[in-house]
Image (cartoon, rainbow, N blue to C red; front, side, top):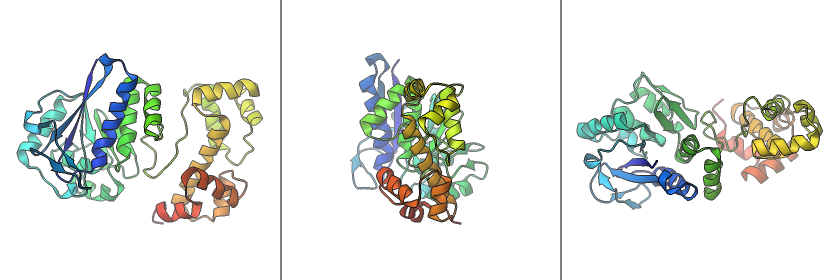
Length: 321
């Protein structure tokens, strides 16, 4: 069946909050039969062209007063000034009714403030851009704001963190609708990571691939994460899976979508990222505890994968300690 995805926009909206999710669902149509295509709709808070925060102009398909459909997914976008904007009681009433009609609803970035002012976040668990999390918590005291999450699912409510996290949320919803393979195909088209999970830190560049929880591969993934300082050779991992090395390599690549060596390196990078964000441990200590040969090896891998050194990463993304 066709599904309609609608995004609410307003003057000053962040363009990528709109185009990112829309591109995910538009690209998905390349891989879906016509009867399963997404139909995309932009709903305007105002009539006529609206300037985005970067100067681009958007023209909505319809004004909110004419948007009376029961959408499959209704999202509200964010923008730099949105925490300070109130679009009035008429729009708020429409938004409450539209979200009640929708199968799923949510926000991109600080679009959560629009939902909050409509009374749609009371008692819910949400996320937003880390820079706006405290203000949102103050606006909605009964709302649990998870400041360090890429996206949060609370029943039929879906909220995402800053800007590009809207792409992560959209890929997640796409996978729920049509399976992981379609989401992976879209992620490849957009050249983005397809496995950034909702529990991932807003700043985390990599995620560990997920296999079926009961599979031998899943057991090996947990073994890797618990033994990052170990050798973690093919023979070691195959032994943990109780499989031959040849069969293990083939099965792992099929189920985890990456080679064992790729998984190990990603896991070590992700563990190092967490230590760099959350501790002041010396780089050589981080390298050792995450399984790199030494600090220089970790530096080389970070440069190749992230385009920054571990020290630069820490300077940019370390939490206040």
